[in-house]
Image 1 (cartoon, rainbow, N blue to C red):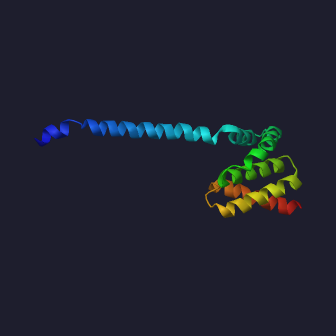
Image 2: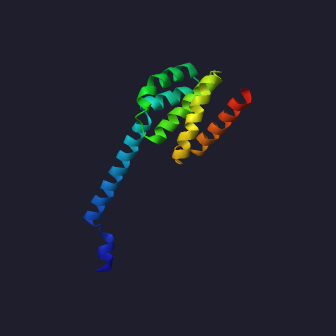
Image 3: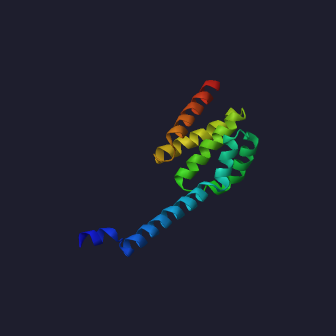
Amino acid sequence: MTPFIRSHRCPHRVLFVGVVRLALFAALVFGTAHCGGPLGSAQRAFTKGHYAEAKRRFVRLERRSNDWPLARRARYALYRGLTHLALGDRAAAAPWLDEAVRLKERSRYAFSEEERERLRAARETVAVLR
């Protein structure tokens, strides 16, 4: 009887595995979409070196960003500060980078390791140039 059990899959297990795969796929698709949107678009403009376009996008998002969760607001502040710094506007960059630091202290998961390093380097640059 053991060989028979091993040779046939339990239909409930197959259904369960299928549902789990579908849920993971949905989470991936909708999670990626959530990371996109206007903030993702502004971040991509920054990453591609389109700093003036990134600045325009970040400025348009400012009012809306006040309602975002802490980690998303922190990321907004970081990239807005980095954008101003890339455009050579240290005076505009400093308050956004300071805001990113304050928000980072309230949420230790706000930034990736790379983003924490970017924030540190940007703040050092602003401090040196003041």
